[in-house]
Image (cartoon, rainbow, N blue to C red; front, side, top):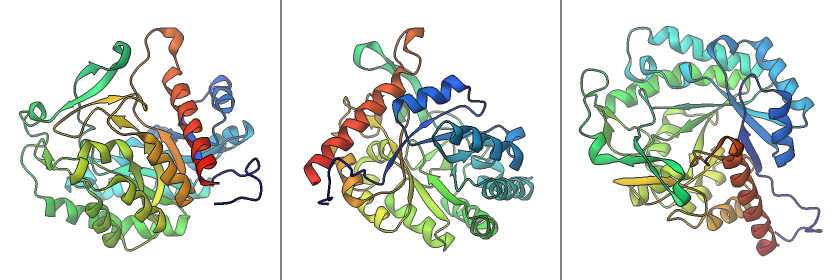
Length: 328
């Protein structure tokens, strides 16, 4: 790395955090006080138009922050699109219109998943200090009924993925918007009769080949990678590969207690992965996108609102500084 002045050097990666679509001045001030470079937001269906998106971007920028990533759950997580259900073409048209609006509003990244039902979870457990946390028990989940009436094949889902890419990629390219594809969570073979399509590094490679365009990138979720363990692929090697290919648009920074078949989400410093090598690899490779706290255990008490985000941002910032010191 060897910057001329370590004091003046900042790695290209940017810290980001979630805000609500109707963010108040206090909410934006909290982000600014934490020193994050960027924020991301999930907008409601009635907020997908250019005027709202442009106004939101200006409001965020007035607080000295970049509005980096905007998603919409309805189009970004649609069973009609994923399973080829009635109304698919109308939903794809809505997705295309949203991407066009983002580009016109000066927002250049959006997120989607290939999970037509949900992020699957079991009953919550507790982690350090009794903090309530998401838990996954694969055996329990596999006893649940079909979510959409029947079992679907993996090739059906890949055909539906191709169908979307053929229609959405030209729109994204024209709008100057890149699509960050999040993996299935948890990344197992199938849940509720629906194959978990994006559950390995190899699945991402196939998705990029299908899309045939740099407009498709990824929301690299360290949590999902760690949940999948060896079946997902080597985490650090994955970072190096996909940074080199300019595919990682958003990096989810998350730790878990163990790989599948069962895990509990943890604080960043309390899972089975040492998160420092993860951050060091992001810094070392020159990753230029955002790093985001993903899910986190819940601190107790109303006084701790925002505590999980603040704790994680501080921890991530310290990891960045350590990496900069070691790599200088």
